[in-house]
Amino acid sequence: MDFQLNEDQVAMRDMARDFAAEKLKPHAVEWDQTKHFPMDVLREAAALGLGAINVSGAHGGSGLSRTEGVLIYEALASGCPSLTGYLSVHNMVAAMIDRFGSPAQCQRYLPDLVSMETFASYCLTEPGSGSDAAALRTRARRDGSYYVLDGQKQFISGAGSSGIYVVMARTGADGPKGISAFIVEEGMKGLGFGANERKMGWNAQPTRAVIMEGVRVPEANRLGEEGAGFSIAMSGLDSGRLSIAACSLGGAQTAFDIAKSYVGERKAFGQKLNQFQNVQFQLADMATELEAARLLLWRAADSYDRKDPNLTLHCAHAKRFVTDTGFSVANRALQLLGGYGYLADYGIEKIVRDLRVHQILEGANDIMRLIIGRSMLS
Image 1: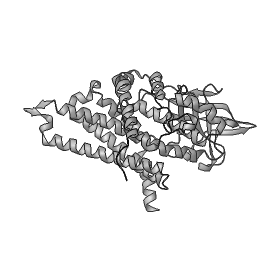
Image 2: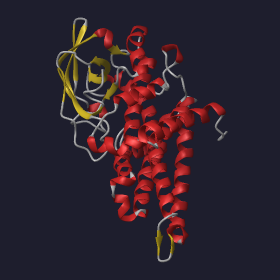
Image 3: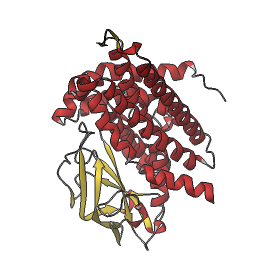
Image 4: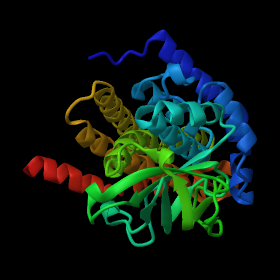
């Protein structure tokens, strides 16, 4: 057990942190307010290797571990959790193609995903099936050497801007074994999108429904074997849960740092706020909770890298605890600023709004409790 980062890991983290400070943080509030999706800035991140963090070097990716990935996502989220959240989705899709794609699929799709010339979206959730993902109703009907896809996906990050969509659709009977995964390309006839959703947070990235009406997808675009789609989707989510937890940690750390600085300057009742024992206790609790969250996340990422048989359980532990802690710390940081925390100028209210959804997506925290509970009682 070694909690010391090596020189390469420190350099990666610092590179991502510098990028966040220079390219993301100065514009984060404006992008949130104008609902601007800065694709050019994300391509700059990709030029640093951040568009394919876990894609193998053989396919042009950075070939980094999940442990190194969470270091990078935490650092990037210090500048903007919303954009880092989308970047984690793009990376998840790229890693799924790298892991499960045929040589032809890897050759066709990964170069543009690595450079982020093409953006990617993950399409599992539907209007009638979120947590109960295996109940999805999108249908893929075989027609010769094609599949014809009909259905709708909901809450899809990047929809309308992405060039490819990894879509889970039903090719067989009800239940998880009847689901297959497909690479659907922008411009395929019958592929459409809903309006950009009006959201509490994550406004710097588009979220739309993905609508498929008779979309003809070549058999060559099926990802993995027929019937393997649900296991492919779940393997992506284990990784995604670590990434979104890291995004929570990075956002919460920034909110904490802003609050710590503020209470060292603001005076009330004749002294600085940080001289009050109550404020010191609050900061101490927040700092301890952030450190505990970070260690649990690192443990889960290490479990993933080692292919621990309990990695899904460890990812559930981390996702539940880190995202709940991140939101709680950011919310308490806002409170320490009082009325100023409620203003956009300080950036904390945006962080609070962005982090709230982390407790819902990539598997709601209630589902994480279900995974943990079933494991304990089995």
